[in-house]
Length: 383
Ligand SMILES: Cc1cc2nc3c(=O)[nH]c(=O)nc-3n(C[C@H](O)[C@H](O)[C@H](O)COP(=O)(O)OP(=O)(O)OC[C@H]3O[C@@H](n4cnc5c(N)ncnc54)[C@H](O)[C@@H]3O)c2cc1C
Image (cartoon, rainbow, N blue to C red; front, side):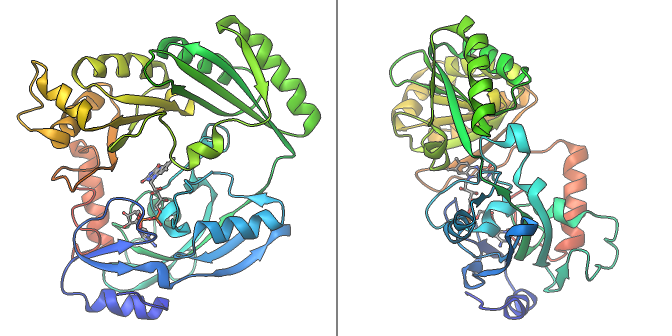
């Protein structure tokens, strides 16, 4: 079903007798249930460049939003992924945030207001209609990152920012994982307002390229990039360029080779290198670091999985990508982090999200009961 209005969507939800799977652009893994396609709710409702705000229906393609902003020299500062067909509602529902998060925060930090339909088919507006018994919740923060389990976003209003006048990328090649995380930590600790810190491993080598970004007025960028070059030259030869891997990253190009499955893992930046080194002993994989090591991308293809299976340690009595996933989540938990499956070559019977500890799981279940008492929105996705 592809409703064209919020009222129509609310009626569909209210009348639903079986679980619904909410689809924005449908660029990520799908779940179970009748597809409720939000792409019919499309279009920019209000754009006030002077006030740095925009309001758009949730199914509006990100490309349309970015084109409108571009025409005014503005941007979505949280750099959502540029996967073809992705929607603004999908970006906020998943809190999908790019490299600039280290400087400006996540998608949810830019969300000002939401309209959504809850699991009972009620239309809720943040700051407008107040839902019975949930008046204490910050609905904007709750809805961003809930992955559609608490409601179907129909409209979002959000902050936008002017595009920076200039940017520079400082790069050091030939670094090991440990050297890269150390160098990124040093860069983040400087007063030069870094807006991106990534490390991409070169195919077939144990080393890679660290990229550090600064943005702003031309003079300031020139000064800060030279200062960073001086600081980071302690780690190797440093070059400065006007471009970097930033656009490619938004398109999903974290690896120089292709992978069949992709996970994002959150760990402490200072432990990222230790984590991937330990992981490699059990699970051959490709990896890249974003957010100065706070977000680790793990990629694996069939050959990686077969090599993992051939090793002595069994994949938790499972096989293939499911076994790989299970061991990866176990190891992420040991690092007090979490691993989320993003893409897979086939449907996997695994919890995509890291299982929550009892305290958080009880809180999450309580929230879902309030917003979706029948348990029909993206059922089972997050517990
Ligand atoms: C570099 C890169 C980084 C990424 N980072 C992340 C990340 O941090 N987190 C992440 O989850 N994904 C991430 N992705 C995957 C994906 O690109 C984003 O989730 C994307 O924004 C999804 O948009 P979509 O419109 O295709 O949503 P879909 O693929 O259609 O849906 C994604 C999820 O959001 C829900 N959803 C979609 N629209 C709505 C709505 N209107 N109301 C309520 N729920 C809705 C869906 O049910 C589903 O659970 C990343 C991808 C790339 C390439």
